[in-house]
Length: 279
Length: 279
Figure 1 (spheres, rainbow over the protein chains, first blue to last red):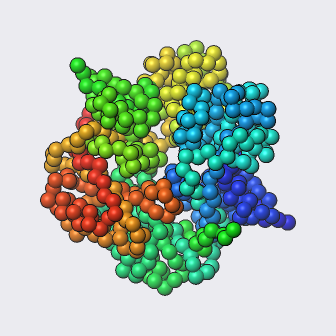
Figure 2: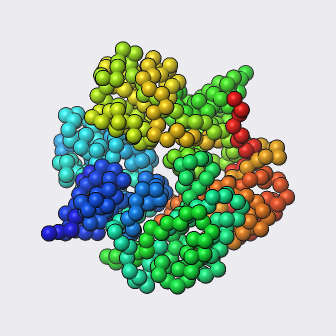
Figure 3: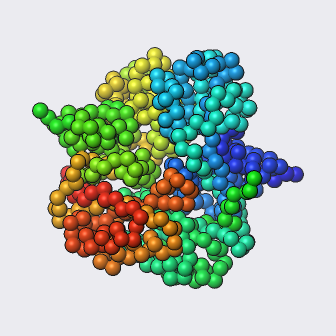
């Protein structure tokens, strides 16, 4: 029986594309929300789950960070990086001149703002719940003057035509995805470790002291970021990505020191650092 | 002639509410995007602009951070904090039993998820470009079975009825807004300073060394956060809020040291720390 992989769907999203690349022979299980992916894995309906965590233009996917911090005890066991290529999708018989309305998720509309202003200055933009939902909406409507912004794969799934490919304003638009599972990954020699921590007091220097534990041991920080605790404005949870594995001696020591200082410390897992495949 | 204040509109959004509280006697100028607010102020069409910068549930408003980092040379001269109270709006003659479709911005729908699942488990949720756009859509449609999630003020502007008030899942939902202008604010004795910086190398310890300049001088950091540089994944711009004014001796010194180490340093301004008014 093939492994089941839950992903933040529906079919035709960039996360499905990431899941397909990660596990092309697995059975893919679309989930409506990022939280539902974690629930599917925790409940054993899938062995692993794929969710987006960071985009080079938009920054972190806060739903995924909040899931890792507050709701889930799953581990990150892999990271994947995929280029984001937005396409303008139309019904098979439509041409550019026909287009009066363009559907997409507000974020995708925003990422293609330059293209839209130049080529469709008088077109109405309409929000959809996801890029795939926009494509589906387009397929269902009997409205020949509509278009959608979505993935090339959505065009196949919904019988649409790609009128323009790569319409995002910034070509360096990539998204990082993580694979969640019941364990993280054994050391490979080129790993990353993701974790979060917070302090009861917002005393000056507490975060600084914590970062000192890493700096002193020459542990490279790939990322530092903060999220609201959701209790009161101005209280933060800090998220850090380290270079190395949590079983490395230096990292182990630093994490023990940090544990003693922090009011909360949660390790999301260690996993192989993503290296782009040579073509 | 009254002062003109640009804000991220349309009328009926929480940002309009913040602008009304900040400058009740001014002429308010709605702008379609956060960037357009800065453009209106820079071009002299308004003297100041009000934009959201951070929500206690969702975290930073990345459009505003990216505007301050990359696009605008305006200064922050004030901060304001407002509770976010979502309301369920219906047409005057509708009742709860009638509702089959609910419009709102995806973020507002997300913040009311618990309420919606409990009270409207079978209702269709439809995305809108803003909460005010949702209310407008409801007013325009001759669809008695629709509702919208938005502000109490939107109900007045669009002739709707508030069916339920405060329907957000977390009562501690507040948003911080900033007032942008051509100068920042003189010292008051209880100030904050916002700035960003980045490094050419992502050498271990550079951010740590920068934070050391503040820690060593007992300067409290109210916030540390990172944003993508938009050039490549894994390169970040760090954003810091300090307690104190940029003209304070200690802060001035620390910023000079930081300037020497960073490849880029931009001070968004110093402004009075927001203190909630006593009721």
